[in-house]
Each structure stands twice: as C-alpha cells, then as structure tokens.
Length: 41
Image 1 (cartoon, rainbow, N blue to C red):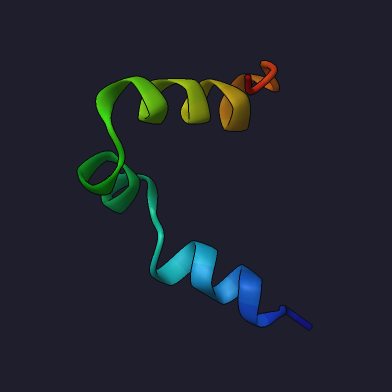
Image 2: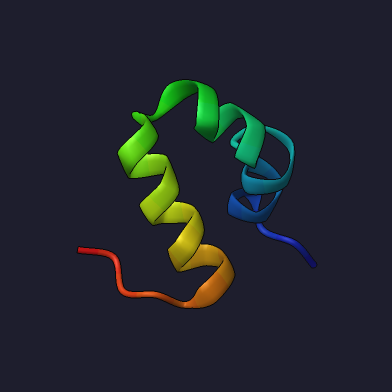
C-alpha cells in the first residue's frame, strides 16, 4: 500500500513542478541526486 508521501511525490511535486518552483541550480542538483545517486550538498 502506498503512503500519502508516495502519492504526493507522484501526483503533486513532479519533476515538472520542481523545475518551475526551484531555482535552476537547486533543480539540477536535486535531479542529479534522484537520477544518479549523486550526493546532495
């Protein structure tokens, strides 16, 4: 069973929304962490 967090992540705070809401630099670092397991500093 999915948690509320899982639904929020999938349906509300998508990568498209992150790109719109976060600064360009933060978005790039966060996506690198999510997709490539790079450290987030």
